[in-house]
Amino acid sequence: MPSVPVLPPCDLLVVGGGINGAGIARDAAGRGLRVVLCEQDDLAQHTSSASTKLIHGGLRYLEHREFGLVRKALQERELLLRLAPHIIRPLRFVVPHDAAQRPAWLIRAGLFLYDHLARRRLLPASGAIRLAGHPAGAVLKPGFRRAFVYSDGWVDDARLVVLNALDAFEHGARIMTRTRCCDLERGPDGWLATLQLAGGGQARLHARVLVNATGPWAAGFARLAAAPSVVGPRLAAAPLVAGSRLAATPSAIGLRLATTAPEAGGLRLVKGSHIVVRRLFDHPYAYLFQNPDGRIVFAMPFQRDFTLIGTTDVDYDGDPALVAIDGDEERYLCEMASRYFARPVTPDDIVWRFSGVRALLDDGEAAAALSRDYRLAYDAGPGRAPLLNVWGGKITTYRRLAEEALAMLLPRFDNAGPAWTATRPLPGGDLGLPAVLADVPDFEAFLECFRQRHRWLPDALSERYCRLYGSRADRMIGAARSMAALGRELVPGLYEAEARYLVEHEWAASADDILWRRTKLGLHCLRGDAERLDAWLRARRQQPAAEVQRG
Image 1 (tube, rainbow, N blue to C red):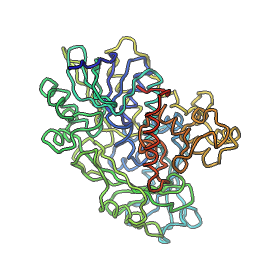
Image 2: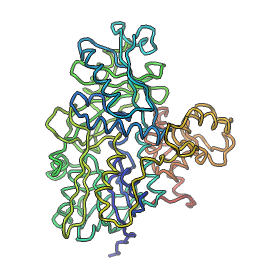
Image 3: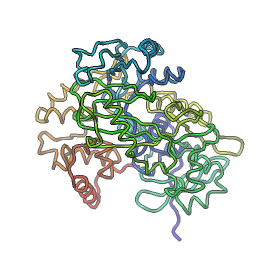
Image 4: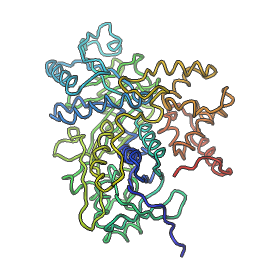
């Protein structure tokens, strides 16, 4: 029987390639620790690419008196706007006042708190407007006469994950996508993990510390990791543990463990779904709509030609890998949007829909009211290698979560460096300017300079490249000085140069990786385009490899 190869040992094995796992890997690698991140699927393939795509304090959390969470999130909002101004940008929200919902005084009080709970330098304060004559009022029903406005941030969520993983890699981390953690042995001085590799076969890895950042699978992974002497053989026989997946078949272990977090007092799995329709308005504002059930729905500009509407909050007890929007959710989102827009939104208008499963701390509230805060559970003791479990969390606070996680783990390491992620831009985020973070770099000035250097690029393509890659857009283009030099157009808007870059530098391996997580160009594809792109990727893999190999 062939022996299983052994990978170089590491200080930290992070299981889970969503935003929390990527953020922890980045922070740890930047402190000089030896880091391996493994993810069964693509980076951000599940929850972290299915968010409402906001960097925000969470205005509605004030109603649940989560002042600490909102303050922490607002502080992080300020930081992240500086650290990644290419993929995160300010967004102004309009809240039409509906006298049958929250009273005006309550909204004013909430917005006052939102403005002042944390230091705010980058975004304008909230205020009130009359909708008559205002751009945001033109597409609303005439019964809405006044509104409130406030600011938050928009983020390309999947790219945020990829950029954290990329920065971790550039600080020495090994990033192993499509790699399943299929067995664990816990010893007094570390963990022995068996990994099912992307290309087939297995490898073993010794890690001093194990981090469970598997999101909606975190509770099941924690129980399995806590007693490997009992479940080890079962893990090897059936893939119950994954970089981000438990068994697809509902079982006494799979779903029961996936919904109960031992140290966290319980996790609730909550499905959030969104729909995308053709653009409903031409102005740059987003909307927050209050609805009769007490919930809110956002309607936001999305990818220039579309409007994103969401989200729902539905308790979920299925396999998180198979989550999908249902007809009731589609109708709900259409009906809630249609209460406000003059032109009704119907299910026939939907051009894309997506769903994700959030693992939220279960405090006994209704799904929509569950806390979006996080909890870190550190499991260690004499003769027990450390295990750090990550419960809950939201995209906006991922960097703070990672910093707190490293503070817990640092006593295990003598040579780790200090905290650093609050002052270092993410890849491409410096926009080619000195890393002085007193203010957000001027994206429009950066875009204009890029266009001057590449006059041969269409304006829309220049903007897309700058939004996705920031100061690394030139690196992605390479030596090209004409459209022909970018190579063949593989699908609408995607040329070979960009596809090669995503494969070689961002772990893209399939059409879905490129079209829905790295670029969102899937919104513009026609029938058969994705299959043609997959065929191009397969043909490329069969060629003699001269490309950069990623961990």
